[in-house]
Amino acid sequence: MIVSDCLFCKIISKEIKSDIIYEDDSLLAIKDINPAAPVHLLIIPKIHVASLNEVAIGDVEILGHIQLLASRLAEESGVSERGYRLVNNCGEWGGQSVFHLHYHLLGGKQMGWPPE
Ligand code: AMP
Ligand code: ZN
Image (cartoon, rainbow, N blue to C red; front, side, top):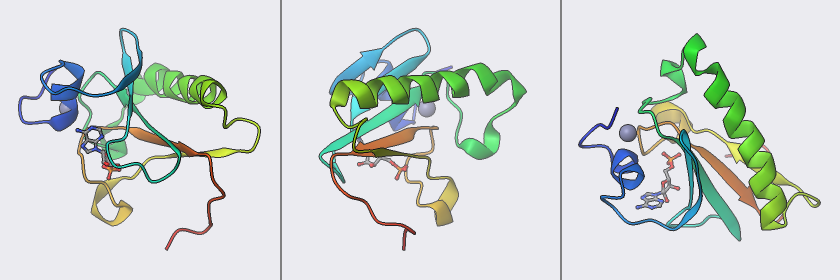
């Protein structure tokens, strides 16, 4: 389902241009337009799910697929060995700004913990 006023649905439908790193029938991975690390990719399911709050049992396969793709893209981006972070921001207090489920793959520098 494409949601007409959703930024990531427009990126998925190619209505808005993006720097695509990977695409298959169910997932898209793009470069983040405002990178927070030397490697900053977004892994986006093609189905419109607003946030992790809305996932259901039927989404288990795609959620697993996201983690496998993150592992593969980390390897291909050269950050596997030193380490990286896979992040989902959920809701206002989680810092989510685009309400179409996505995961950030961040790497290429030492990151701190815990987040502020
Ligand atoms: P979040 O704040 O977790 O919802 O993440 C949304 C991310 O989308 C941010 O890191 C933005 O920099 C990124 N972003 C916003 N617009 C675009 C765009 N047109 N292309 C690629 N990334 C984008
Ligand atoms: Zn969407």
